[in-house]
Image (cartoon, rainbow, N blue to C red; front, side, top):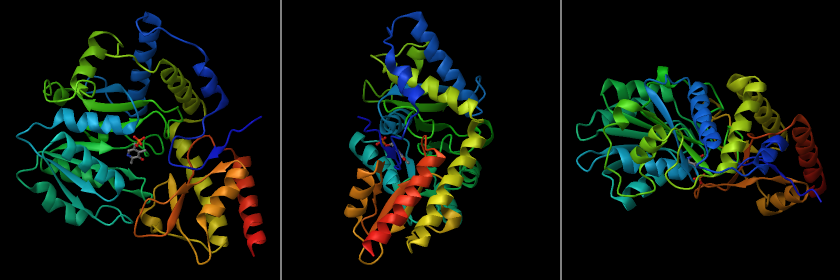
Length: 363
Ligand SMILES: *Cc1c(COP(=O)(O)O)cnc(C)c1O
């Protein structure tokens, strides 16, 4: 019985058959073949991010994306420093939660969740003398907002602060250059737009800064500096058991990304799928929550219209092989439809046909 569903969610995502098949081999973590695979993946990841190997490194960390964010925040901010969190959604608030719980010195400013971070209001905050680091989300998956990473980086550079960017749901959804953006720390994960399976966080770090971060992290397993050192000195060793199958799947997923035309092509594909779904939803008189100019290319929030019951809608699509996603904004009655992952044209055709059938029936 094929119970495989198309995931129209923000992650984990639908993966290809071949990515799943790549996991059918067991590997030993202390074996050179595996370590070479780790080093290979780290190198390719740097190329994908356009990061110069002498300036940047990519570090793999066991766990979901949050483990990567927590690792960075707890490993690079000293007790006599302070990170400013620019928040416009639940993932910014998660950064706050991490800092509060781990006692990382921080401050947070919260902005509207349905708009981009307002550049003109950020400068005065970033300029503050007590602030040493600035952390924000590139693609805020909460409502589906894309922040202006170039504009924010420019402000951060003007005041010589260290930048920490959660690019979890944006990395590989659009072209991005570490060299050009001059980001100090950027975090993503294997299971979003890279189309791998869950289990690995990816941290890009500027070597010169990370080299100064020895002994900061109060946690053993989340210590980014220690993970970096072991990976470098051990030529691809993890400190503790690594998810070997996840890494094999990631390697395969990246190869498929490159074969299908790279990140530019993936971006175009996402935009096309998102547009087709949006147009079919607008036809059913749904409204989007985020203004088009602030919308990210990965997920769209729709407001529930009168008489609409999301749970019924969800169940109907689930029965027909699609998983949708509820909203995450307490103040709005809304839900989300993602457009990332291995979604075929036929998957989109059938989604649209189901949508039309659903409202035909309901009416
Ligand atoms: C998915 C995501 C994360 C990571 O969440 P996990 O639950 O740890 O996978 C972090 N930030 C953003 C913006 C995300 O979309």
